[in-house]
Image 1 (cartoon, rainbow, N blue to C red):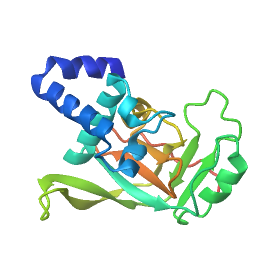
Image 2: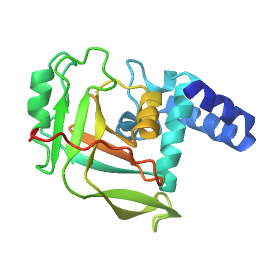
Image 3: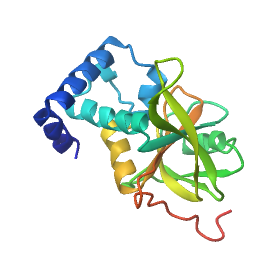
Length: 204
């Protein structure tokens, strides 16, 4: 998917230029590191991402900037530990706001994600209006209500292309990057694109 997206961008002069600028900014470290990590975090720095991963990052960033995607930050007690410490990470996730139920896959053996984040009531997320805010540097934001549902949970290392895949296929993804004490819930707001699963009965 990421390779196909890259090909599409390279056929468009404007998109190709935007991709080139993005790769320069990623290599120069001029983009907020936490923002980048919410979209993708690898064992090597974003300045070394191959073109298709930079393209996937740009696609998610563009979706956030235009209001196609929205986000909300959910504080927890600390950053995640190594992937194998699933019990410890589950304990930290349990400190999230009571409206949310994060559940890590105890085995995570070939699963599509590290776990699932459920919420059982409408939540408010931040969505860009697509217009520049008063400071002239960031887009103006508006609150959007999202109905109860769920999203795949990805902890630590995750390619930008995987984040994009979850947004396209599942309508959302919850990202908990290494080194950061917050989970970023990213959601697609496109009509018919919000394919979120309901929490199973009896799993409270």
